[in-house]
Image (cartoon, rainbow, N blue to C red; front, side, top):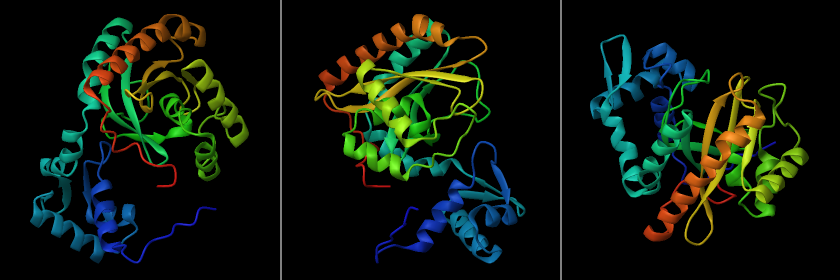
Length: 271
């Protein structure tokens, strides 16, 4: 069981205010007061205070019944994105890759125990969940997460696997820490990860690590495909060579521009 230790500095109301903002997403762009309270486990009175405060600050708009985020919330992430050069470096290469393979590709970084999408070039929607910049998934469940995890020291991998939620998402999900540890060793040896329908039925993905000029893994690039259209063998044969060539070009650009400002690539003990 993970013990969540909060320091004496921790501001609970600030945490709850952020939770209110995160309650809105692509599937829930407009919420009532009751829905926000329920999603954030707040009383209606508390939820109302947070929403009206956000409205006064310009981050939320309401018609009196429904609440929606305003474009001003983009300011909250702009400073991070403005200083994070890796997506800008990678995106032209992702566009070229997608044009070649006609499948979606994304760039992800590690944030806590999740991977976060920081650049994406889609083709068709193949997942139940809509994926956009900012979407996150547990790192151990994804190909792009595994190539990043495989670049970490063994002791840090052990810490992460010990606290990971290993519940199955599909019948194929690896739910053993030992099996995942062995898989990460294999990913490290072969230089790529292929995940076959572990996160979602019908979804296959292959990923390769992005390295900075010091050889450190700072991100991963994936190609995601529908299992009905692409066998494991065809992914390795037809898609993997293009993926590896793309990552090599991104690596070459990073060697010229310097280490990526990967603020989201955090330490193994931070959560």
